[in-house]
Length: 149
Image 1 (cartoon, rainbow, N blue to C red):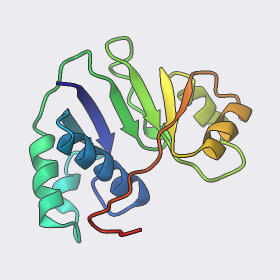
Image 2 (image 1 turned 180 degrees about the vertical axis):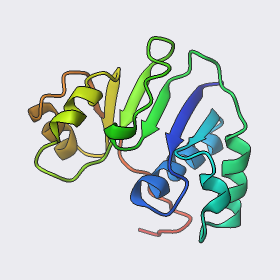
Image 3 (image 1 turned 90 degrees about the vertical axis):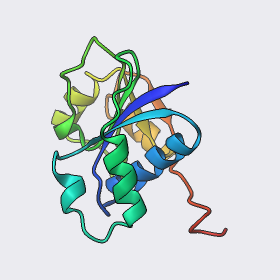
Image 4 (image 1 turned 45 degrees about the vertical axis):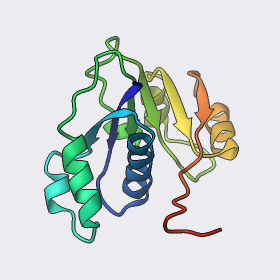
């Protein structure tokens, strides 16, 4: 069974909502998922999340996947966790809607093994801003149980 470690906020922010959508989709697809909430007590204090989301987040945050599973961190680069550098593949998933990135982000993003973003526009902006590690487009999840295109 494929496995992945995923770090994101568990809240109603853009990063939190899309992060939990990825976690949910991977879990439903049969992946072993270890959820790392962006803040230790975040799940307990988040209001307005569905009971299902809170229960699933609590369950998955107790999982421990193998040490060779990739570690996706869906957050701004200022909060990337490099403590497992060299132990597993570190992936930064950082959507950012601007024409460039702060210099401090470039340094941190280039320390990751790869960067994911939701669009080709985002990828091109990162590459034009000096990101030298591989940058992959991983589109956001569309929740067809909520949205009916």
